[in-house]
Image (cartoon, rainbow, N blue to C red; front, side, top):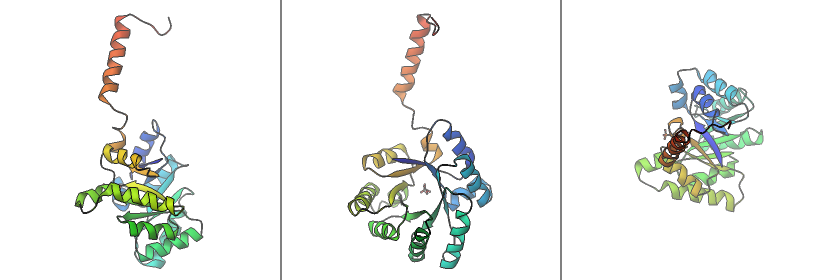
Length: 220
Ligand code: G3P
C-alpha cells in the first residue's frame, strides 16, 4: 500500500521522512495557500525533500487550453510531479491527453463510482476518493464507495490506483487497509499519532523500570 503525506509544508515532509518511509505527497490549492509560500516555491521545496516520491500538484483553471498549459508548466517543476486534476469533462479530456504524453495524473474530488469509471477509462494514474468529505454530508458510505472503486479497477484491469484522501482520523486509515485500497494520503496530524499505543508506552516504561531496578548495563 502506498502512503502519502497530505500537506503543502515541505517542513512536515522533512520531519516525517526521518522516521516514516512515505511514497509521496499530495497537495491541493488550500494546502498550498496554508504554506505561506508561492505555488512553485512550495511544490519545488517538497520535490527537493522527496526526490523519489510522487508529488501531486493541482491545476486551477477550468478552460481546456489553460488547463493543458498549466499541467505542462507544473510538470516541468520536477520529474516526480503528478498532475492533480478535479474531475470534470475538461479534466477527463486533459487526463487522456497527459496520459498520451506520458505525464502522470491524480484525478481529484471524486465521490462516486461513475466518476471512478470515467477517470479509469481516461487513464488516470491515481483516483482520489475523499472519505472525510463523503462522511461530512452522510449522503453516501465512504467505505462502500472505496471498496467498490477498488473492485472496479481490479476487475476490469484498469491501470489506475485508488487513493483514499480526506483522511481525518486513524479509523479512516484502518478502513482503507481493510478494503485493499491501493494508496492513502494522510495529514501530518494523523500520521504523527499512528505509531502511538498506550500499551507500547506503558510497556516501554515497565522495561525501563525493571532494567534500572536490576542495575543492568548494556555493556555487561
Ligand atoms: O488531498 C485532499 C484532501 O485530503 C482534503 O482533505 O480534510 O480537506 O477534506 P479535507
